[in-house]
View: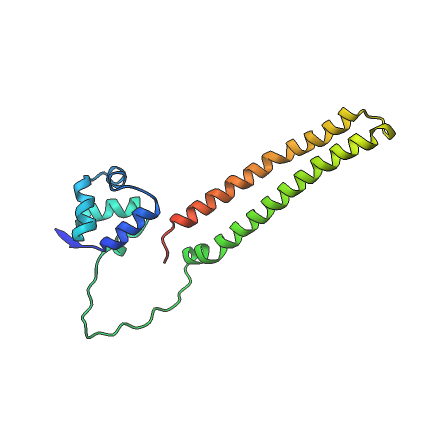
Length: 170
């Protein structure tokens, strides 16, 4: 049984993931022609709708095209705060901002650490028990220990940013 579906939603979600129609068809286990028909004509079988909605991470009911009578007025949507909506609208942006701020602060701190160590090692190594190379080496090793932490923060930020860009908006 063919059902009318929201072809614009299928296309938008596919493009948010930067997928071609072929990739969506492969991931959903349907033919390319089926995806083309979904996006152009707005029809699909129940099995196709379920398979595509699983791949696009949405509820299959969201793909249904429900036509309301023209005379009916639609009541305004109530702003119900679901956990998913709270995550996407509030927590995720704050987490992204926090990670980005820590990342920039860490990079500035690392550069400052390297600069201070090299300058102090160059000018003041004679007053300490260490040679210039020992003093400079300690700062560089200290910075090298801190850099993997910054790389981890960077990839965490990228992962959250990527998932925010591909997440469907409620």
